[in-house]
Image (cartoon, rainbow, N blue to C red; front, top):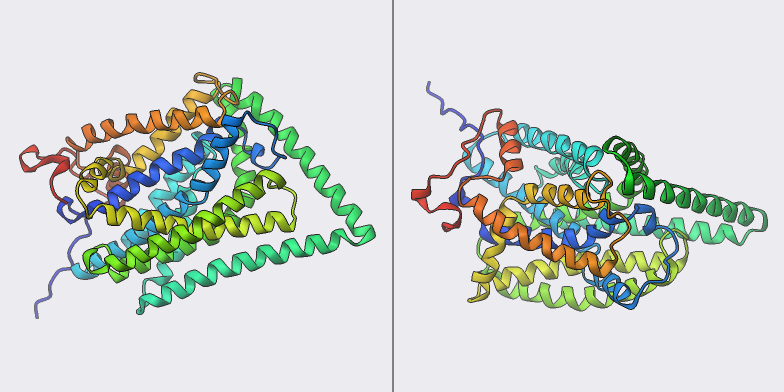
Length: 428
């Protein structure tokens, strides 16, 4: 009795790539750098301390980033991660290959990248969280009905919002109790002093420290950030993973023309909800800060969470629709190589920015305001575009992507392109 061998797992071929996905990743990388620039150039404790006075141009840049950037691009990238998961699962099933073992190796390598990135390059790493939650996403491999993914996405998001409001309500209620309120105020005051002490410590370490001193401070900050940041980010990331997996399972990007009305509704509805929610949230955060639990802060976080999801979906829908029209499709195609080597460009952003700001580089830490940081973001991203085009015209993968795939499939992947077959800009 003969048996058909199971096809060996292998990276996706170039002709199987969906160029719109690469454009979306390229666009998301610009937004991520825009939001991350402040955390590259300032102690993360500055997010939590009461907001200080800023020049009008820095204030305008801060509001612009809050309203249009913060909470919209890590959510968009999370959605694309979930969408990629669904596409890889579908292709593995079509080949008759085993998906879970290969995907677990893929996540394990991503986890390794994330840990190295967090502890030796920059504290704001998202790869580690993606790798861990990607293992949770594997539990949804056997979901038959794509709508079930949306139900679970809603459960994750609503549970997080209700928990946040319940915790805030408990604190506000306890503050009104005579003895308990005094203790709570004292605890908050003590915590603010810790933030201020760590803020001053970070200024010295990042601004003028050696690589070893910076690494020691970075380790303290990673542990401090992950203990709270992951609790707030994980439900949102999981929500977007599942929304992305739903889009992938429905095959919405395989035939955009057939779903044009849906994407148009998502774009209009996403902006109609997202823009007002984000603008109000940005104004509230400017007034109340982020560390003092209050109903105003809870409302700001709710609006930022709602606006982040809806506006990121609106961004995705707008890019998808623009990619179907001329001349927008030609202009947006310039972003495809940036997204195709998205992991490499993400790590490159961290390396170049930490060199600019940290003491073992140019030492400009805490010396660049929001407006100047926005201009620097544009300059760095503008440099990444031609570099990505040059690289992808000669190689199949970005350097980090090549290492990721080689370790995942446990064999070196072919790196150089055959230039006789169209190079990086051949139809995908």
